[in-house]
Length: 401
Figure 1: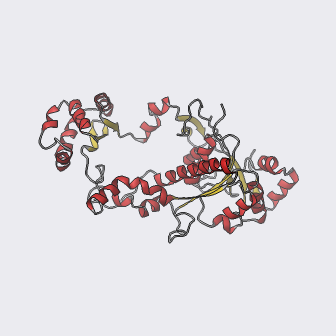
Figure 2: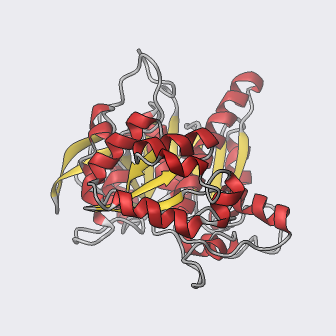
């Protein structure tokens, strides 16, 4: 059975996490994704060195081809315009106006190919607004979007999430925008210009904190691992004999089940804990009681006890735990592939699954410019002499085939 996006071709100008993750999702859904890079490679490419970016580059650029084009050169710009006439999607996450500055922006390319879907993801979007031209990365978006104002220990300063969620949630929205535009094109025959703002994407994640803000009319204080509005208890991480476990009770029934798992049925009728209101008023005492129970057991034992009782919980896993997670293995989410610096490393398959379809087999991230000659020959019918001349003009880079 063919994958959903087979037959579509994408020029992926993605940089770092946001754009490349979108390109990865497109590739895993069956699209042909041609990664367009400068003559020295995109920002995350380690360029042969062993760095912290070596792994994420490999992770996010599996199943892509690489073409190396100097978009600052007239010859490179001519190539981009010619390729845009042959593909279905152009995707990028440069700063606003970068592509337009070189004559290959959304308006120019969709004029050449009216069926083209041109999709960009920027910090604050391409539409007018006071932040339009601000540069944006994950930490600055967590800051301006309000996330850091509600993250951190009680009484402490603002903290960001160590996970780059703003980048990846924007990449997911970029993918959704592209697929939606392709569906629209199937109905109208016309392409679209897709404009994704990272700030827009982050806003919905504030739903719980904003609910507290509207209820109380003021900014909720930072609450560490507790509920942002301290409106639920238990809702925290608790000490285990070998780490920590997270527990949340969102219904009265959940709390009664936790009491059963703890063999402390008396707590459900204790006046300090017999309702949402009283539990929140006495959450310090409740957390102390739960900790006294959890610290006697391992994370695995606690997981088994709570799951058997119907309690919402999970161990706080470290990175090694995640890489060896049995559920991710059972779903086929992670696969071991060789890496030039780290040996065998775990790669991910797409989180998007379709009944009856097997995940697309993973191929390593391409070497810089490894597909340049083949792509220009196939899509634009360039011969060896033309390709050699472009290389001499430093309009393209040709890597190992």
